[in-house]
Amino acid sequence: MSTTELVESIRSKLRSEADPERALGAQAYMKSEMPSYGVTVPGVRRIVKTAAKAFPPASPDELRSAALTLWREAKAREERYAAIDLTGLRMVKEDLLMLPVYEEIIRTGAWWDLVDGVSHRICALLLAHKDTMTPVLMRWAEDTDMWIRRAAITSQLGAKSATDRVLLAHVITANLADKEFFIRKAIGWALREYSKTDPGWVSGFVLEKAQALSPLSVREATRLLK
Image (tube, rainbow, N blue to C red; front, top):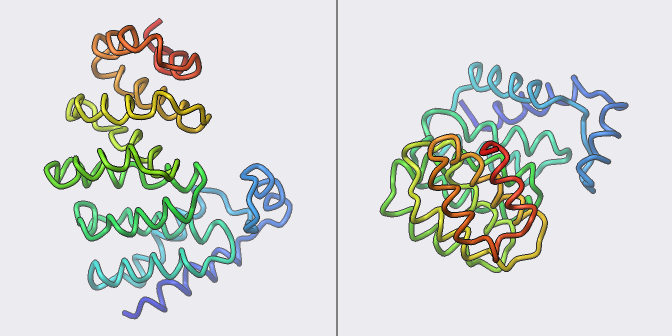
């Protein structure tokens, strides 16, 4: 199987299911310069799943190549969604060589839908390679790129009882002074998700950092605690 067949299968199916009317609304909603085909998120996932079954990557390297080709050559936003969906295939779930791919997606995607699209992928790498990933995320939390910092903050969404509370506290504390909406929202989101597992810890953290946390972060963090 060549990556070209997989990539072209995804591209052609996305084009064939384009909805021009929906596309205009989707592009406006995302405030994106890149056009949209108007294909729904579930639709993109279905297309990728079908194409990957018909033209399965023979190796992790082939998968990476296909994903990066879709990402770098995207003519519409859904092609970037498709690239992210390809990275969800099981063969690369715990593959550390995916980290540069995710970092490229975050830095060049630079918008919440694309950045958040790889948050669970990063979480999977963290859970599988804690000793390697923890210092990476510690550094990411202080990166000059806001979206890399957001990715560090949201890196344990879904980790539940496996959440590293020291890491969670670090990535949040490093960004408490940031006034950016997407950072403050991410802080609240990360805390709210962990409150489903350990509400006592989240309550204590919010109380301890009450003077530094933004009202938005506090509101989001405590939504399930009331």
